[in-house]
Amino acid sequence: MKNNVLIVGGGPAGLEASSQLQRLGYNVILIERSTALGGHLAKWDRLFPSGVSARETLKSLMGHIEGVKYFTDTEVQSINRLEKSYNVILSNGITVLADAVLMTTGFDLFKASRKEEYGYGIYNRVITNADLEAYFRNGSDPRIDNPKRIGFVHCVGSRDEKAGCRSCSKVCCATAVKQAMEMKQAFPDADVFCFYMDLRLFGRHYEDMYLSAQRDYGIRFIRGRVAEVAENADGSLQVKAEDTVASKPLKASLDLLVLMAGMRPSVSGRRVGDLLEMPVEEDGYFSVKEGIVSGQKSPHPGIFLAGAATGPKTLPDTLADARAAAVMIDQYLSDVFPEAKHYKNLVRELW
Amino acid sequence: MVDFGFGLVPSSRINLDLFDKERYEELASMEPDVRKCMSCGSCTAVCTAGKYSATSLREAIECIHNGQPDKALGMLKSCQFCGKCTMVCPRGINTRHLILSINKTYGEL
Image (cartoon, rainbow over all chains, first blue to last red; front, top):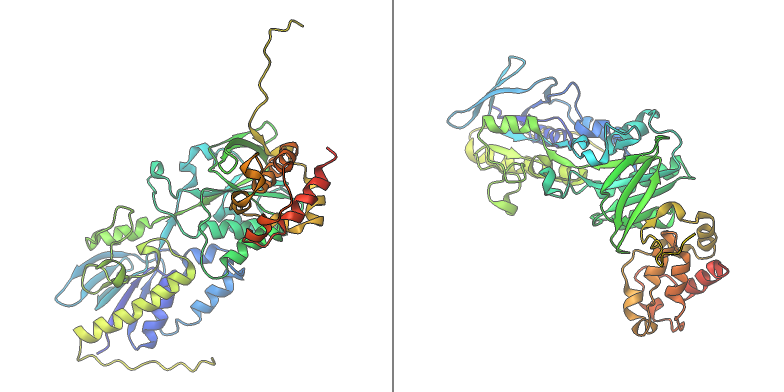
């Protein structure tokens, strides 16, 4: 008898965990709510810090899920705890007896229109980080018409208690710096301004990226949160902020404003969590069992968590979390089902 | 016109539209490291002239970006070129030379 592992969410965490568990010999069932695997990665163009292609990155993750049964357009309809396992009914009519469940339900992007003072959805030349990635992928967006002055607003829906999002989304500073450089590559004559509160990009290569943005691309970093945006008669934008380094109010006219929408807990992930009565913390992300030392275990036996389901993470964070979850699940199943036999699927892979 | 004895106070607001890009590029071609400043304030903290008069390279660079080059020159006019700021700059900017270049580029204003 092989143990079944159900993985909820087909983004990078779900894909990586599927591949690892499949190779450990488990019977992996991966479900994804939308029509395609890949999660947010499928919508992105290039990734920080080195600018590798998101398409290629996703392709390589997908290349490792051979043998995994996956269902797209599929959600969890009901889930019940049996003695040792979970009885899960899926929206496609299939019932799965899962010996372990891994929640890789990821995140939703903050709805930038909720910050009305920035005018997303009201002013034509205000776009989001996701819109800009779509532009880089598809090469066209009527709102981006050879801009000469471009602003990036960090922390939109992050570090903002009034919007109900106190936490830092971790990836937006690095994304803003990456996108600012990409805009300079696309429009070398443009002036690019980044409005930040703190620059929170740390980790290997990120400081080099920041230095390069300043030295090689001449991007101007202004410490201060954009407070309001207004539209001029010609469609250009007036932006007000305080330069908190100079302690002076500041205004600037811009042709394009990019809002760095932050990460929010996934609504559909929470729906599945509610079926299981899984506790969430004040920030809306799922609680883990014992804090920092058991990062991938939920408080319920046999239910595991990986990726942004437990808070904002970068892609490498997410992949590492997924691999860790695979090991935790392997340990758990070996303890609970000692009679089950699993033979590793050997995949000959050149180093 | 009748003089009522008071005038409009000049705005203290920064207007980024007043930034002189051409002149800044002239400075940057001479002194590319000016782009590397991250406003840490080490230069200002160790400045010997700063003890007696408002002297700050960090603030001068800010003023240039914010379209206030005359203010930037004022921030540097008491500099004695002792070079202490060069020793503490974490980004390795030759700050002493940068001050000379700023004076040269914006000096004839």
